[in-house]
Image (cartoon, rainbow, N blue to C red):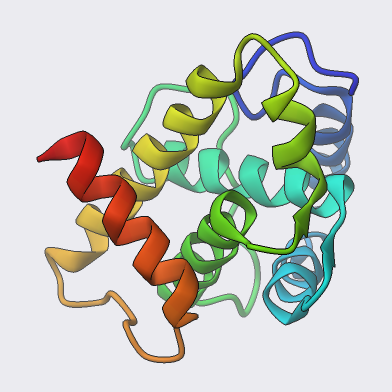
Length: 159
């Protein structure tokens, strides 16, 4: 898998992607990965997943929701609220997609699966809570099956 830890920049794919983004901050290094996951009906590839979850962590760092060395740079003509909405939806899909989520399946085979999964949930919750304080959470166009699984997981583990 090329990962040495459960956090989102503890893998080669995310580290290489971020180095490229730092060199040349461009929305074309961000938006297409999120869109690909959001549009996928059958198979979520591990590369897009690693990068999407890296975007989740780096955006959380930029908003000072977590402490990280990976801070998402400002991207020209990208609305941060829209970006947050996209990354929340895409990250939930990686975790709860009923079809094939390659990165999730790789982690399920790992001893650190629960740490990885809960880390993603905590990042999603922090980002979601940050924006819900300002009524910027987009509840429309959410996949009802994924939202149902998300809600069930949150109620079971955080109530």
